[in-house]
Every structure is written in C-alpha cells, then in structure tokens.
Length: 384
Image (tube, rainbow, N blue to C red; front, side, top):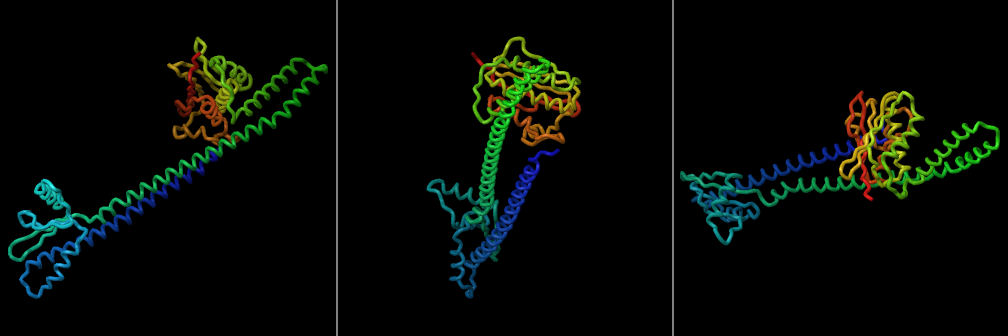
C-alpha cells in the first residue's frame, strides 16, 4: 500500500519541474532579447564608424551636420577610436581616472579590443579601428534574468517552508486532537471493565482468569494514559534504560508469535536517561511490532544498548525483508505502510515520542533486502 503522502509528493515534483521549465523559458527569451539588442548596437556602431570615416572625406556632398549628429548621438556605448598603431585618437562614454591616465587608456584599449572591433578603411591606404563595449542597458539586461530567477527561487523556497510549517502544524493538531479524544473515549469502557472485574470477584470464577482480565484492564489504562500525554509536556524522570527495555519486552514477548525470538545485549551497569518511561515503552512496543510484521511472524529481533560519551544508543535489528534506501526517511511519515491493513502511524509515533518528548534521534541505521533492518535510537545520558 502506498503512503497517503505519495500523491502530494508527486505534486511537489510537478511544481518544481514546472518552475524549472519557466526558468529555462525566461532565460531563453532573455537570451534572444540580448542577442537582438547586441545586433542593434553593432549596427549603430557600424553607422558611427562610417560617420567617422566621412569626417575625413573631401566629398563636398557629405552633410557634415548629419555626420556630427550621428557621432554625438552615441551617449551609452563606451567606444575608443584608434589608428593602425592602436594609439587612441578619441574616446567616448569612458570616465578617465585622475591619475595614471596613459596606463588606463592602454588597458582600456586592450579590454575593448577583445570584445568588439570594427575596421574602418579610410580609402587612403590607412585603417582606423573602433573598439567598443556593451552599453549599460545591455549589461543590465545580461544580469537581469539571473536576478529575476534568484528572486523567484527565494520566493519558491519561502513558499515551500511556509507550506511545510503549516502542514506540520496541522499534523500536530490532528495528532493531539486524535490522542486526547482516544484517551477520553477509552475512559468510560475502562471504568466499566474495572467495575465488572470487581463484580466477578464476588462470583465463583477462577481467580487466575480474573487476574488475566485485570492485567488487560491495566494495560488499557496504560494506553489511555499514553494517549492523554500526547500534546502535553509529560514530566521526565531518570530511568535505567536497560530496565525500561526489559519491562517493555516482557509484556511484548507473550503477545507475539512464538516463532519470533527476542535477544537483548544490554550494558552491565545501569544507564540513567531522563525520560518518560511509559512513552518510551510505547516506542519499544511499536518497534517490536514493526519488526514482527517485517519478518511476517518468524525471525529474530535484537536489542543492543551501548554508551558513547554522553549519548546512549539503542539498536533494534530484525531479520525481515528490509527497507529500500530511498524509503529510509519516508517510513517515518504518517500514513506510510506496506501492510494491507493499518493506518501507518507506528513509526511516525515513535519518531514523535523520541524527538519531541525526549530530544533524541531515531533513524534507519542500515537495511538490506531479504536480510533485515536496524533502527537506531540516540538519547542523551542523564547526569546526576
């Protein structure tokens, strides 16, 4: 069964793909405009070069006022006119420095020469050269698409973050509301069951049966208590992690398939962790159930505890079918499940309890298809 978030994930990728297409289209259109403007500037400079040639012409029919108007009409394109020895004859739209003018002019000639060159045949056996740069407008247009795209991507990123935080807040409300309502709904039948157990004690019924019923009622009370703590700040207390794991597994060992073997490798000395024992037991139970499902009711589960500096690591390893690497993070999403039945909330709940209520971490340490998976929990060690 696919996760209920898969469709939303696909929509996210479609949105990203569409944004990339729009960005590429914007760059292509901008590139076309830039090339068109560069061609127009080239034509303008060719006209300017021709006007320069005409200033040396002895043809009386030449309208010098028009020639001068063309030469003066260039107010945006930096240009240098040089002779065949690259000595500057004139320059326009270039600001000269107060010092080292000659060195600046030589450097500027070499710079513009490498960009755009127009050769003027003076028709007397000599040549002049027009070296020019892109106009300020063209330079701004070259930068503009990238600035525009940067702004667009920033807004997209902000939108994603806002949507993610809104989605998370909504999920939190759903979790808390569902948990509180579940605890409330369990309260009435639990009270009724307690009363029935007390009533049955007055009858001639096997005490061992009543004892088992009482255990199940207490179990329901524990479950209701756990749900009631979701959304609140349960008071943590120093607890020996080894003992907490033993207690949780002692309950689970009689309620899973006899074909599943549970092994524990705990530390010789107690390790104190500041936590809520009831909620942590819920974590162990869910991980155990998840492992049993992954092994289809047959295999081995190993709990290993080790201490590294200020961190306590709990590795939970099963011999199940494994998890694809691409799903290492997805398995913790609410709704993710591979079973035909179920809501897919077990691992999501585990992650929430470990991270939100104990300030720890849980992740898939390793997994191999057909061999099994190892989940790792990391908690801070408590210092007295």
